[in-house]
Image (tube, rainbow, N blue to C red):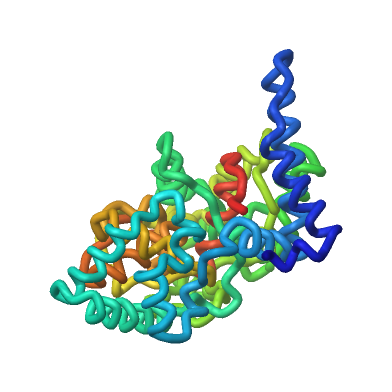
Length: 370
């Protein structure tokens, strides 16, 4: 039984959350009613995120029968999963659980011997546990959501490639945005580097001065390169004040201006905000997670019924952290860590990429995941 059952207030909160999702809109003016219901859901999700309740709700109500990858402590847990279906028949992948397929998959890993296969899985789980996310990694509800469906991922990649997102300093100043509405301008956060006298306009600069100025930007971190696995979520190229956590999808003129804000700064550098995003195919063993919750039961069920590798449907940071598709990555690591996973890789490290893409996803109107 979930620990929330003894807490009436929390239980009522969870029941209301379900009720919001299951409530049917009225037949008349269905579009407006649907939008209102979505707003209510987003407000409730924001409240749960703010007090860190959404992760607990998901863990204890939705996936209460599964086990987090980093919580597995011994071979016996793997044996119980394979033989008795523990954490599988009532876990995050329960809908697709087939005991015969799971045991057959594990036996194949052991050259036909189930016990040897369990040894292999346990060894690979221990290896997976070394792939820890960066310190300070956001909870699932604060991760970017840019689904590959309907070309959203391609659109986001194009915005980054063309420098439409105001990624690096100098930033478009608050005054430029306030001229079109002070209230909407305030949504873009504090002024940050955009008000720093060191970041002056490069329009009309002599070539030598431009070169020196670019060196100054690099020293400040504006054009730095990071190619090693991140130990924490510290940004190196962006000013985080320019990318506040909006806690949910945005709409209207303010959202559209954010998606074109890179064209309004005063850098004079055509490539100042451009972020190269290109297809990539990388062995699973060379990728790293960016969230601290991966359900082992779901990953094992997926591994027993799917081919390893394939399209991740997500963006990968230049230091090798995946922003989505964590269970596809984990199941590939369980099946064959050498198999390549396909995605698109952005030339930003994880500490910069998460806040940037989180705002891009919100501005494109995609709801956060619970």
